[in-house]
Length: 136
Image (cartoon, rainbow, N blue to C red; front, side, top):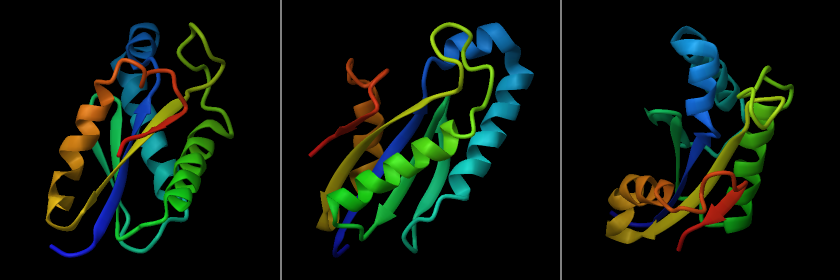
């Protein structure tokens, strides 16, 4: 596979607290609302957004080589989810639902490894609560 790809996960911050406080039904509505807002963000052609697992969305942007543009895309997705606010947040730390992002980049034949690299990035202890981190 030629070229490069950039991608990032969007993770709902403190989702466990949200589920505990609001329940599964409200959490399903939250997923639908976040999915809708992420789909409305202007993104480069070919960008794909997928629900990965519990509170995580994966955004694949194949061919996007400019790190600053990916940073802008991450910021746009955060704003789309957080403004206007989706109340009542997790009822512990925020008045609105918030998300964090990270990015990964792979070139050439290793682009197929992007999803794995992103999922691994979610295990980094410092990921939660950070607005954005970048992985090489």
